[in-house]
Length: 323
Image (cartoon, rainbow, N blue to C red; front, side, top):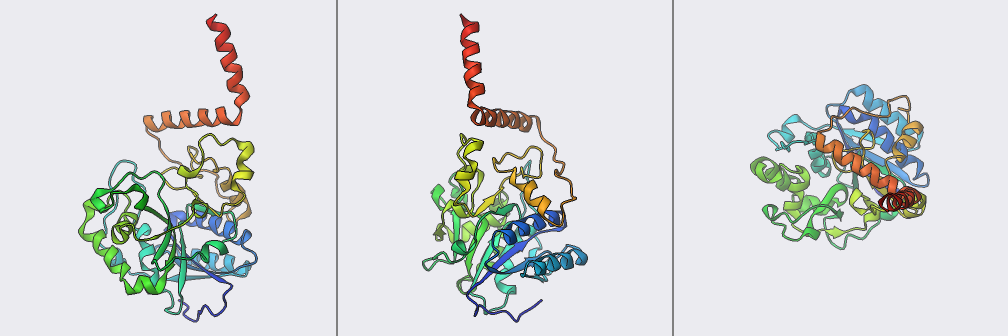
């Protein structure tokens, strides 16, 4: 671990990522998107991946160096997440790695003032500086509202606008430490498993902040819920022109054949530009019958909006047959 870091160079953007062994390829793809779209920024990536092979650590460090960036790995004891609750419902996909984001404030140099945490199921498609320099207006974190979350009264959140997605967090590190967020969220993860078994650390953090966080534009964390369902392919470039980060949240990722995000096509583009270009395009994921039905409906809907002329032909044919 390196500690000789300061923010005296205002051009530096400090990013945090956390992952486990199964996500190494996806980390390469994320970092490829970061580096290619932030060539004018000085990037420092702080990483937590305690169960990832050391050889993989070095490979990622070397990859960052080739892009004039630094990547620093930190150690985290297994005891740090001992007895943390994880989702146990059907279709649950989160692992203990989702909790690692809670510990960066304790591990990175105390001189750092700000950290941008990014989930690895994302792609950065724009310049991160605007997000990194966002005014938190005195709040500990800046985040984007979860677009598909109902009120969660069991977490103390009765207004659906108060629940944020933790996949992208802009963190004021001194305030995080002052308010002991790591300890408070960790306590909830251990002692209130029935409350956080839906979304693990995200639920715990939402309980801690209880609506007291800075709202950021969905441009900085573009989740599926913020993509118009009737957006046709011909409008993709226009729609993405001002977006900074695409988040493939949910159980279906762009590396699954059943991926349900309209911008899943971007993943193989960055995969091919990454050091893992030889990796397979897809990772196997079993679907339930309900999942298959939902997928077929989703694909049909996409086809309808992408090629409206097909729908017009079908309606004319149907009208003729009904005569």
